[in-house]
Picture 1 (spheres, rainbow, N blue to C red):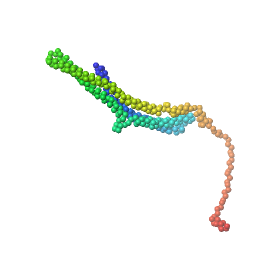
Picture 2 (tube, rainbow, N blue to C red):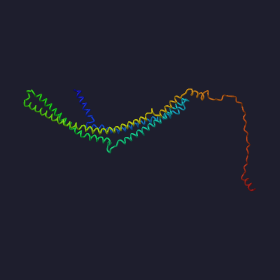
Picture 3 (tube, rainbow, N blue to C red):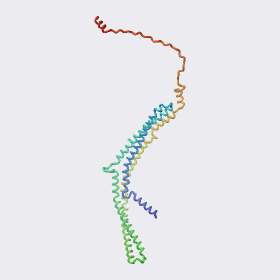
Length: 334
């Protein structure tokens, strides 16, 4: 018995959640409103990811700048030194790449979503959006006649069930009264009449209930057609939103997926080439020729003594200066 009650309750809950029941179309209307907020959340989400990319780019650049002078002054040499330096130059190139990813997420992907959001959703003066308001109006107009008939049907059903319960109670009283010597004949007759009146009322309410149900059933196809027409419009708009957001996600993925980025492949390809170019024989040869026995040198040889000539002193010419008095005398004699 309990399982039957549970199944009945579950069926009623499912029916109450059905799209066709009054006001349940609001979930479809709200979906349109929610899409606007989804755009806001999407922009904020990947703005934060852009900050992560920017910070990572800064950390790479700072790490490279810190270690460049240390590596250059390290004891390593030759191809080993070049390989270590290649890690730092690769970091600089990756830093620039992640900085460009940050820029793309904000200025390209974020701006695209904002532009589409502005073009797709048109705010009303007071609140809400024109798109969701149009859906709500369409659904409401299509459902109003149905809801009116459904309310009438529920009232007819309740009246029938009420009459049926009253008839059942009358039948139970009649059954109890029959053959009971303590109940007078006249009272038993009245109980029987009450049961008969209750039965007539039940039949009357049942016929009315069936009539209203038939009316509702006749109207159902028209109601479904009009509701599905509005719903299809909502689905078409949602299809456009899903398609756009799919392309937006693919664009974000393209910017974040560095595994297929040609620049990244080139960076790590060159780094791998530098590592594979480490050559112990060449490094040892370089050390031998620049720091070891291979370095050129002038071995000690006998050097004869060569006398050095003293430089000759030049005679200084003494120039006598004429006095002003002598210059005046010379002029006067002329």
